[in-house]
Image (cartoon, rainbow, N blue to C red; front, side, top):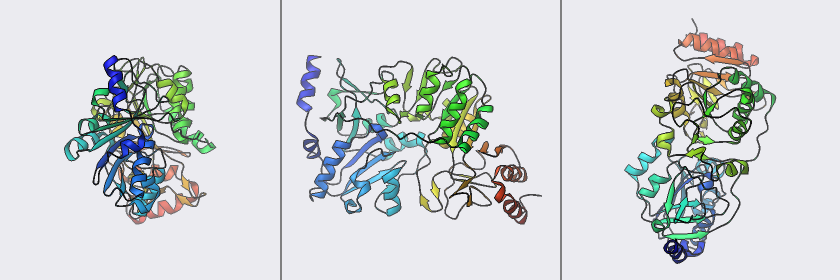
Amino acid sequence: MMYAQEDYQAKKMTAAQAAALVENGWLLGMDSSAAQTPALMQAIADRAYAGQLEGVKVQALLDAYPFAYYMDPALLGKMTGFSWFSSGAARQAVNGGYADLLPSYYRDIPSHIRREYSYDAFCISVSPMDKHGYFSFATAGSYSQAMLDKAQRVFVEVNKYQPRAIRGGQIHVSQVTAIVENDSPLPVLPPVKIDRDSETIGGLIAEQIPDGACVQLGIGAIPDATGLALRSKHDLGIHTEMFTDSMVELIACGAVNNSKKQIHRGRSVTTFAYGSQRIYDYIDDNPAIEILPVEYVNDPAVICRNDNMISINAALEVDLFGQVCAESVGTRHMSGTGGQVDFVRGACQSKGGKSFIAFTSTAKGGTISKIRSTLAPGAVVTTSKNDVDYIVTEYGVAHLRGRSLAERARQLIAIAHPDFREELAFEAKKRGIML
């Protein structure tokens, strides 16, 4: 312990001092959301603004802070962001042409990192050091270990608000190059308003989920509504990509106890957590949650080992073949593939498993149908017609897996908004889809 504390003090510095170590052309890596390092990134951006840096690149996933390199086009070429899965400012920057996208299945990111990249520094927000000299990766298993393995240096931002995940990744002070203390509250997601349509969809999905099932929920009104509808279930388990507020609620009310899982029985498994303070409080020193690397958590061969695996994800639009677009509006970038396909495939390979893609039937005040004859020009196919299982809107549930094109079209039209069903049927017949 004495040597660890001496090492800590020797490596402790301000964010500006750590940023002064960065050189032109460096590649920096960060993991997702609450694991990111706002003080370090701002100090590095300050040097770029001062004309002291050029060619710095930053890789990250699901931005949780208003990073300057995503907010300001003037930093392009000086400090440029590369997103594995974008939201907020990163989405704006990619569409504006001053940030770039790294397309990938979430489960494959660690293998891309190990094969394709070498990082000049890996930057991560960690919990305070324990008595043995270890920092917890806190909210992110994800691909942190892969970046750590491929980094020449490690910059940690120590934050007393970070939870200590005792069943998650760890890093020893001896592996660290620079330690910056930044005690600032973690980023939180604002509460989602659950409207009547989302409540209806959540109820329809919950009807399909048996007691003892293992669930993966995404983020948003529909997953939250599904979580609320599952409170009356028994012996549910959690094996998920993102640990969310609805899952903490299901644990708190007793619907989830992980007692029927085939693997990791008694524990909730995730690869990262992001949401409210309630989530971070739940993780802290809790042996009942495991925050593990994404190449394991999101591997379909691992996911399917739990019987009755249920995955619930979202879409922006679906065509009559069953092709799912979840990451663009036409050519306009919105997010990324993430782990949707990972869990669609894993759930469908599970004994008794089901995969649901759920969304409200219309957009823009009811003027646009999200079930379309063809996807919008330029739309990205996230989940293929061969992988899709169930599609759910507020008008019902369509089961597409193993069905013919004509059967798919009929079922999808039946759950489209009534205002668009006649037009969709006309298009399907004109294209020879419906016999």
